[in-house]
Amino acid sequence: MTDKGWEPVIGLEIHAQLATQSKIFSGAPTAYGAPPNTQACAVDLGLPGVLPVLNREAVRMAVRFGLAIEARVSRRSVFARKNYFYPDLPKGYQISQYELPIVAAGHTEITLEDGGTKRVGITRAHLEEDAGKSLHEDFHGMSGIDLNRAGTPLLEIVSEPDLRSAKEAVTYMRKIHTLVRYLGICDGNMQEGSFRCDANVSVRKTGEARLGTRAEVKNLNSFRFVERAICHEIERQIALLEAGGTVVLETRLYDPDRDETRPMREKEEANDYRYFPDPDLLPLVLSEDFIEAQRADLPELPDAKRQRFIAQYGLPAYDAAVLCASRELADFYEGAVAASGGQAKPCANWVMVEVLGALNREAKEIGQCPISPTMLGGLVRRITDGTISGKIAKEVFEAMWQGEGDADAVIEARGLKQISDEGAIAALIDEVLRDNPTQVAQYRQGKEQVLAFFVGHVMKKSRGKANPQRLNALLRERLGAG
Ligand code: ADP
Ligand code: MG
Image (cartoon, rainbow, N blue to C red; front, top):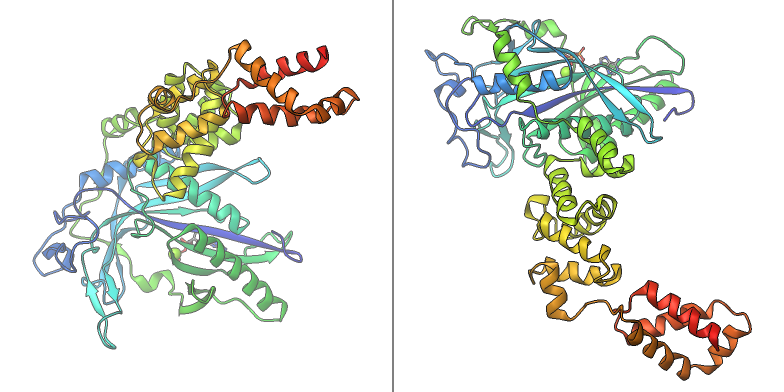
C-alpha cells in the first residue's frame, strides 16, 4: 500500500511466552489462569536475599528458535537489568538481554499476496522475563496487581524494519506463530497473551532512503488488531505529515472498541533504562555439543514441509500452505492420504473444505476433530473405487462427524451404495423418458440442455445413488436410439 506517494515501514517486536513448566528464574509454575498471586514465589516478587537461577529449558527453546531462523546462536550471551518503575514489576527492573542476545541475525521468508516471496530480517531474539498484570476491574478506582505472570519466560523476537504494509506485517507474524508452534516452544495462544507484539510504524516519501520517525503501538494480541492498528497508524502519520506536522517518537495504545491508536507515553531514550549486566547471573555460555544436539532434534520445519508436500503429493502451492499451517493439520492430512491409498489431491480437498469447514463451524481445533485421518482416508477410498458418489460422500462425512462410525459402516447402515448396475439404471431412465415425452421430443429436435433435466430426474429416483458416469452414458445411448 503506497498511499499518495508515501511508503510505510514496519518492524515488529514479537513476544512469545516459552512453554516451560516453570519460570525463567524460579521454580514457580507458569500455568495460565490460577487465582491471582498464587504462582509467584519470592524470586518472582523480588524479595531481598533471593537469587535467580536460569531455566535450562528456556535456553534450549531459544536455541531451537535461533537454529530454525538460521541465525547466529551466541556461544556467550549476557543477562542485563532493564530498570524502570511500574507497579507490575516488583523488583524495579526486568531481567532481559541487551548488548549480547542469545540469538542474532536470522531471517525468514514470507509469501506475499501476489505469490512472490520476501525475506524478512530478524535482528535478534533475546530471553527475558514477563511482568505481572495490573487489574483495573473490581477495585473501585484502584488497581489490583496479579504477579502470577511475573517471571514467565519470554522470547522477544525483533524484526528488521523490512515490512511495507499491514498485510505483510500480519503475514510475517503468522509465519513466526506457525514456526514457534512447530518447534513446540510456545503454545501460541493469543487470547491468553502467550503470543503478542509491539508494532513500530513509520512512513516516508516513496524513494526516500532515510527512515521516518516511528511510533510504537504496544501489546497487540490478535492478528486482526495488528492489521487494524498498523493501518490506522499509517493513515494518522500520513495525515499529520501532509498537514505540515511531525511524527513524534512515542508509545501508543490501540483501542479496539474505538478502532484507533492513542498516545500512551513519550518514548524513553534507551539509556533511561540504565541497562547493566545483572550481577546475580553469570554470562550464559553454550557448548557446541548442546547446540548441535538441538539442531539434530529439530522437527521438519514449515517451509521444508510445504516444499515436500508440493513435490511428494503434487499439490498446488496454495494447498500445501494451508495444510502445513500447523504440524497437527499436516499430520492429519498425511494420515488421510496413507489410508486412502495415495489419493493426495482428493484428500487435500476433503481436509481443506469439509474438515476445516466443519471445525470452523464448531470452533474446534484439528486435535478435537471427531473424524480420524484413517476414517477420512477410508471415505476418499470409497469415492475413488466407485462405491459412492462425491455427493453421497458429503452425507457419509456428516454421519461420520456425528459419530455413526467409519465410512463403510455408514454406507452399509444407510444403504448408500452407488447403483452401478446397468440394468437398474436403464430401468430408471426408461421410466423417466416414458413420463416426459415432451422433453424427449425437445431433445431430439436438438435441445441438448434437457439432458440435465433427465439426469436430475433419474438421480432423484435413485435417491442420489446412480453412478453419474454410467447414467450419462446410458442416457445418451437411449435418447440417441429413439
Ligand atoms: P527499541 O528497543 O527502542 O524499541 P529498536 O531500535 O530495537 O528500538 O527497534 C525496535 C523495532 O523497531 C525493530 O523491530 C525495528 O525494526 C523497528 N524500527 C526501528 N526504526 C524504525 C522506523 N523508523 N520505522 C519503523 N520501524 C522501525
Ligand atoms: Mg521496543
